[in-house]
Image (cartoon, rainbow, N blue to C red; front, side, top):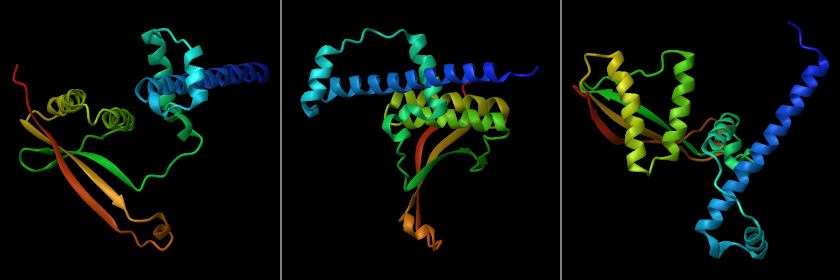
Length: 190
């Protein structure tokens, strides 16, 4: 099966239109959320825009479709998509068995992609105790299935902070690590 140039051109046009719509959607929803929480910080133009802008409830399947697409393309970060901020640190989830041995979660390319997505959602909900526990329990459930000898998992987050980016040229990194216990999850014997 060969794709003709005209078909490719039309496909790319449709993708571009969908991409622009998702960018607008993400930014309008973010602006609406910001405006609902921070009305005192809006300038006159923002207040005028919101008074004339009525957005009804958006169907969940549209939110989920555009949300998934914008997550995969990185456009869910609003303006940061065009001007990314380089972080001076990183975080990593670590799973430790009751015997103190680190459990390797990533065993295939597919599991790496799934874990990146789970980590993204985890980072969004890190301060939402209920959602954080649900995500950790879901990941741990899979670990228990693959490792029947494990009865308890301690989940840590390892936070790495780098001193300054200008030291990256000379490779003089000052990296500080902090390992924080997030949760202890026991096997459900039901």
